[in-house]
Image (tube, rainbow, N blue to C red; front, side, top):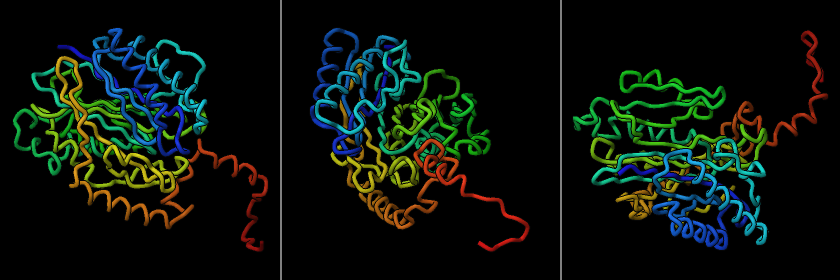
Length: 371
């Protein structure tokens, strides 16, 4: 069966500040999703969230970039925004960058990751939702899942994976893409994906196949709005087993709370902390950044689940490490490397502060050092 999995997310109002989503907003989202299923627009759905972002996880048969699906998501987020305004939620509708829907969600604010696949006899899929970080935060775990034999034993011992995978990498600044064949082009790929603020893994394909094994959202809000309106809070879907990384190999990279950009005001580096769905509310310094993992078995388009993958106590050590790393970075205050470098602060509020002082800078004359 050919089925499309769509994850579409948006921040349409935070409770309190940027830390959570009010139950009234979630209830309105549930109503919209139930109505869409009843009308036959979608096969199945799961309403999820991470921090102050609401995610619509949906299955349907309409393919990717479908106008009806995207229009439904836009209408849903607009309706939920009205509830957010009624309850005085912070940043109500902040991810809705335009006044009206226009064909699909590209350039409109909400993030989305979609894949159309031929459903296998058993189709395990894991959906990842992150808060207080950027799309490039998926580069590290995707590299580990699909290219690192120290993480994924199947790359060594499974004949169906031994040849490797193809990685589609997007340049978000120049709006270009390139495909790397790994492992033979692994070193070339690392030149780019090691700079996650610009180069982002969009799709991963098994060699010889056009169906994706993984897909991410790559929307950058500041590139669309021309100003800082909030962090991108990306989503990702990864298929597992039977020629693809096993479930345990897919979640294993998150046992290390690696450093990502985002956190407070989208302007700081911090550890990405894997948490269960009951702990997805970033509070300390609006953080630290966190990720939840929802596991499903897909059957005839039905989402059997979710299973809360990071609620496992075996991730407790990763959480403690994340807290220790967060404490270490917080002690740096406004100094790098906690604060992002200036070239990554261009679309934050910092340039407005710097501009006020611009005229006070004067040229150095010779060896003059008297101030």
